[in-house]
Image (cartoon, rainbow, N blue to C red; front, side, top):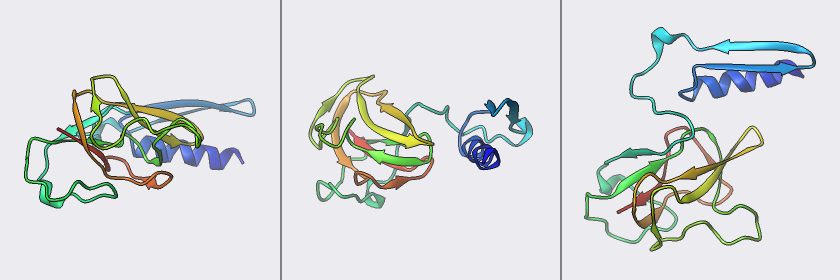
Length: 149
């Protein structure tokens, strides 16, 4: 069983900017370190949002606002692989909806990774133009989640 948990830690390490993980399973301490010689300098820090301009004609999603011609929109991407949740609980309203104004530091969603709920916050101020992922669906590392103008 500890081998599966160790494999999960290695998977997270490979798909994030984390360079080192220490964990203890049933009295044994494990330390997993990423080879620093192969780190991609474009990888972003885990647990932060990614900002990247993209060609808007490539973007589609469940809550698309139609024809997108403004290239000033910023994509917020998933900092880790996991499951996307739009609200803190199934009964709660979503953190944001299309058309909502958000400020730097506002929570946008949750990405669950290894049964840990990670709140994803925005580092920009603007209006949510698109939500690119459906609630409860898996997301990959660096997958676009939101478009904010």
